[in-house]
Length: 62
Image (tube, rainbow, N blue to C red; front, side, top):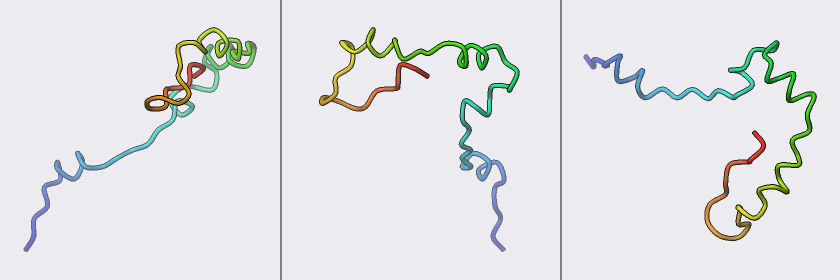
């Protein structure tokens, strides 16, 4: 009979979760996101990102 180590199985499990799932619907950050257009940040940081060299970066507007 094969015995399975339950702790090992739990360690090997993967769960994907998004920021939207972590932030409650009535949180202040959601109200700010709706009220402010953060697209201006792209122009402010464009010189700090390279389009053709290295790995893709994290979007500065998260």
